[in-house]
Length: 84
Image (cartoon, rainbow, N blue to C red):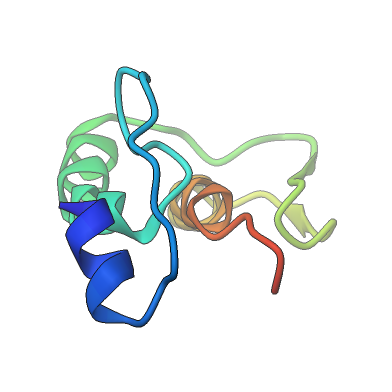
């Protein structure tokens, strides 16, 4: 699927990689909804001490902020590439 999209976008060359999944690609973006469902089904308590996430280095304490940060961290790993 990714090779076809690359060629349709004008890529001169596309090589299929022998990997188990397109983990660092926008092709995984649809999995965001599933991750959000799973996280929302978990009981995560507000913390006593702030948690500093690597998505924006800001402290979070509230459970909904923690869940949101986990999703945003995961999303950022999808868009690793030459223009990021």
